[in-house]
Image (cartoon, rainbow, N blue to C red; front, side, top):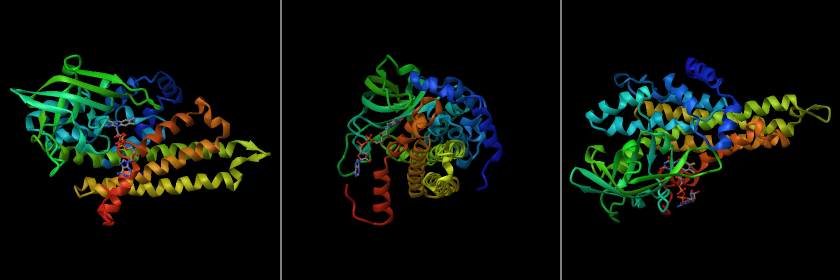
Length: 382
Ligand SMILES: Cc1cc2nc3c(=O)[nH]c(=O)nc-3n(C[C@H](O)[C@H](O)[C@H](O)COP(=O)(O)OP(=O)(O)OC[C@H]3O[C@@H](n4cnc5c(N)ncnc54)[C@H](O)[C@@H]3O)c2cc1C
């Protein structure tokens, strides 16, 4: 299959070569942030590919961004530490005021400012976002924010955060109304009403829980119109799902590469294990699934770039790619036998990492529900 953006891919591969498995294993053990890797990607301009040239980015489309993330993951690295720096700015770009764009986008493009945290999920409002209760009450020139968020990744490594909160109580007649987006300056907020608590998880993802206690956020931080925040957040989700899908494709390629190499090399019963169809067919199946999913990702990215509706395609890309990467992960572990469990092979680490994608940023069931009710017109269950 011909690769898109070969020069970008080659450059990303070269950069990733400086961050081998040993680098990631060390961080994984400590659950530490890959500062040097993120710095290198920032300096090379890979995190600003989606920012228009007038604001200092390279103004490329989503297809280029998918190539970057896919190669990062294929190389055994992980873009989860910084992928949101690529797309969270889309909320400001699409819905921010000219003053907000001028103030933030050039600095995000240069890496001077990091906008790679977005706070949507809450302990009692997971998938059902309209149930969020974090509330921003207007008081003079400020909003006063109270509430709690959970699973907010990279908050400790971000200068700014896109925060979805309620500005009016939930109205049963129109549940998605009354939510607003605030661009919170985390440098100002921490210890002045915002507490960030890291949450240790089965993978190294720098995710956190946030506690808001009378945090004052200037009214000028409101993005777009008050009460319309849910729509702004939904707008950004298509890009996010397509980009995450490209990480899954990269993971699947990593597993297929590793499994193929090992199956040719490892001899049992006096011959390479890859000679056995019981070993080679799962590898071939993983390749077939990854290739099909990859076409779906390219299709969704092309629609997004053309400004066409792509909600269903973005969801389907995310579902097929996350299932392809998980199948490939399981296949790769099995192909490696006992060695797949040894840390030094990096298989078990990537296995843990790629499992996330069937839950976040949206779980498989919710995608199936979308396709069932929006595409196939089946009755709604919720
Ligand atoms: C490592 C990590 C990082 C994350 N980073 C962020 C972040 O940066 N910002 C952020 O806002 N959020 C983040 N999330 C949250 C993530 O988006 C949610 O975990 C995800 O959307 C699922 O929500 P939930 O965990 O509350 O699951 P729930 O909504 O509680 O669902 C639990 C399970 O039930 C299923 N389910 C629920 N309702 C139905 C239904 N009606 N029909 C069928 N099945 C159903 C779901 O599919 C899921 O499998 C992160 C999560 C993780 C684990």
